[in-house]
Structures are given as C-alpha cells and as structure tokens.
Length: 98
Image (cartoon, rainbow, N blue to C red):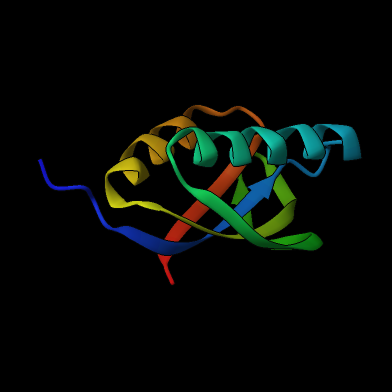
C-alpha cells in the first residue's frame, strides 16, 4: 500500500457571531484536534475578527472569521469536510489547497 502524500491546505472558517471567546477557542482546539488526529500538522493561524457577510447565512449577517494553514494527507480531507459540515458552531467553511 502506497502512503498518501501530505499536502498543504488553507481553511477559512466562519463561526457564529454570538460565540464567546471561550467557545471560539474550543472550536479552534477541536478543529486542530481533527487535523492532528488525522496525521496532519497545524501551521499558522490568523483571526480576521467579526466581519459582515455578503448575504445572510443560517440567519446570521456577521461571522467570526479564522484562517488556518495546515498540512495533512489528501485522503483525510473528505473526513474533515464531513466533520466540519456537521459542526453546529461553524456557520460556513472552505478548505483549499495552498
């Protein structure tokens, strides 16, 4: 069996504007845990803060934006997408190859 090649990714995650700093930290730790449990590594992170959305998503007009750079095997991305889709505190997310 051939090992899957590790690739670099970026994820932009929009969290609820009603989330407290503790809830945001918990969500970030959980996201990091998904990556490291999947054999990946988390790189740099930027918090873009509370921003207005172009259109309402799940009833919210604003969201807390986070950019995270990470690396993991490509076969783990589908599982990460599934987990993030089911997460209630995440309003929207996008994962792209860097």
